[in-house]
Length: 116
Image (cartoon, rainbow, N blue to C red; front, side, top):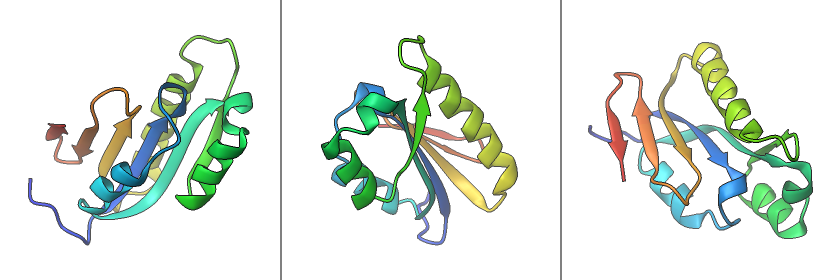
C-alpha cells in the first residue's frame, strides 16, 4: 500500500494495555496521513492519572471511559466506536488499532491489512 499524506486516518488505542508514551505511534500514523479521529479507551481511574491526562492533552486523544472490573469493556467500546466512525466519516480511509503491547494493525477501506 502506498502511503499518501492526504489520507484521513482514525486511531484507536487500548489504553489498558500500554504506557502513555505515544510519540513513536503518532510518527507512524502521520506517515499514513492526517489523524482525523484519535481516541484512547480505558477505565476512568487509569485515564485520570496525571501522566495519562498529559499524554491525552499532548496528542489530542479523546478519552473514552470503560467500566472498571468488566472484562474486555474497553475492547468492546473500541470496536463499536470504530464501526461508528466507519459510517460517520466516509472520508477516513485508514484505521489504526493498537494496544502498543500488541502489533499495530492498520486497515484501509480496501481491506488490505498491514501488521507491524
